[in-house]
Image 1 (cartoon, one colour):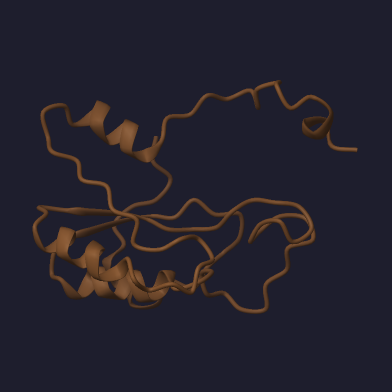
Image 2: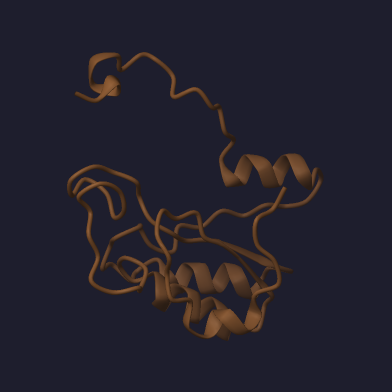
Length: 131
């Protein structure tokens, strides 16, 4: 039995900031705009246009894509969460392609529990495994 189910008030052991909190701390005085372009596994594309408008007004885009850890179908990666392709869940590739099409520099963060095919974004990769 999973410990978390028996002790829901016990923290996971690591207190991590959100990506937004980390960017605000790292770049004080900068305007950080957060837009949800799509959910992790959503098929809804309605947020992509809003993300593109924000990207066109930005100096740089930090795109946070990836998967959701879970057990036995409650996530997009993890024990019992199989995938038959290397594409990211939902419409994430459509969002990334739309952001790349803006011409604004894009930094891709991809916290994930499995490998993913990056498509044309691979031509823009500059680093991995930050400190």
